[in-house]
Length: 96
Image (cartoon, rainbow, N blue to C red):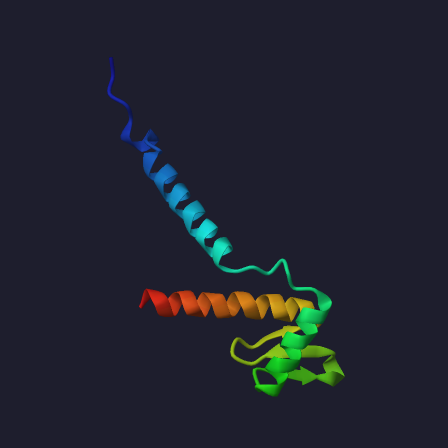
């Protein structure tokens, strides 16, 4: 009987894959964006504009998320992005 080829060993790949899935599950559990309806999004965007976190650019019909530099043409997209961005920054701060 021959020994298995060490190049065919995929156990490390499986462990890496499992680690990635666990990280994704943790990220999903930490941020709930499913409840962002149009009214909620508009209220959040208005608060962010008042706090100088978002800058509306009327001539381009976009909203610019200043801390990230990302531009959005939808208040709902911006609200979902901001929630995820905030959660990511909070998670980074906890890990330090």
